[in-house]
Image (cartoon, rainbow, N blue to C red; front, top):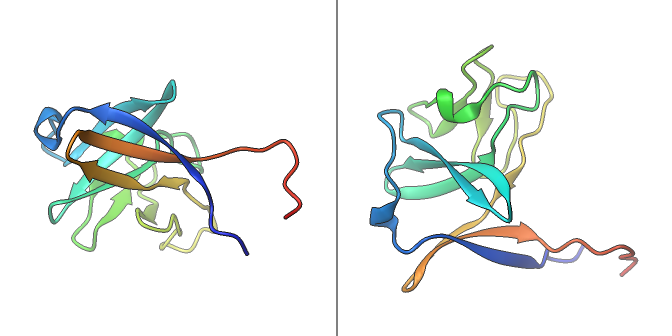
Length: 118
């Protein structure tokens, strides 16, 4: 299996520019798409804006003690690193890599190709 190729989108000039709510979550825009950004133990993590179950806005939820994002609607929990639904309902959350570089904070989105056989 091939490693995914990413296109990187700058969301902030620095980490200090990201003003997290009390729940350590914010909404950012990358490639004209809303993304939820979370901060857990000084690490930045990114995932979809909406919960895959019922569309809850994940930035209105919270991050639990293990670093999972918790949806505000039905309290489904997702690992923000790999997207696995840890409460067992079988849903999968889209996650994105985050890089903090000298010139800013970037979100990686997989490069989409029309045909990718290799």
